[in-house]
Image (cartoon, rainbow, N blue to C red; front, side, top):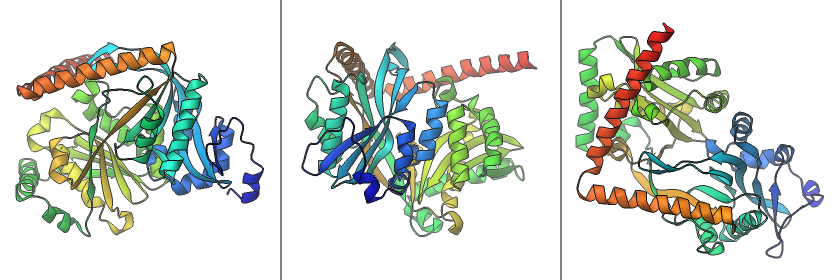
Length: 416
């Protein structure tokens, strides 16, 4: 626990004073983080910015260089934190599914849910000024702040602090949907449209009729079950278009450790639907301080006509009403799929904010990323106007699924 005496003795190396009684400090070593463990755990509301996950990520990520946490002090006490890291990595700048550029960069990456504490405009202005100074001091070529809405104080502060050359342009905004859960599952169902209720029940009934007595959902919740969960989910992911694109669930050390951390805290929710003992769909999420965060979802295309993803999703939502693991909010994160529109009752738009150093490397990266983002948005807009975008996207997804499934089958044959 941080005491007033501890804070009065703190050395603010490299800090800036912007207002009377206000100071910022940047934590750049793992040892410094322990000093803020209690306040970090108290303020954090998103598992993506959880301290234990941050430490695990630092151990697992090959691009991790060091922590970069900016702390704002008001009257000698920490009042706000922005959780981030310095990483040396390679990024993909895409138009649709096609890579246009793959530059290697040094960036300050600030995590989703990483703005902790008092997010007043004054504090956010201090954070923005600190990021600006870090880039000016050549600590990185760019900074990325994840998942900001245009209405947030931090968004307003960075837009004010960074000029035209130092801020990104044509940055994407994503639909972010969630459910404010009512008092009971029956009340939730009644809140859906009649058409959507009918569709949900129709798919559930079709599955039960065609595979009578051969379906069940297993929920993985404990740390000892994480490896088994990953093994079962891998059987499904091998046939999905997400895997062919290199996105979605991956059994990498960082993801597995994240699931173990959630399980140790009692928040792991990994539901797998089995049909005739074969895994056919899954939904993996974490419950954290009263909110369920959905992370991964997928289904085997062989069972597509039964909408197995929707079946396991509804089971996951129903679990949130269990008194022993009650959640008041179900957060789907980014994406505007039809199933989200069918069940969600809240939405907003958020996206990354990109900031750059006033250097050759920083300005070059700004031009590349902004140019690619402009072309991507323009192409999507043109294709959607002629009603061609969804057809092209579906055709492309079908093609890569078939190609990937064929390659995966060949690999299995060789292993056997």
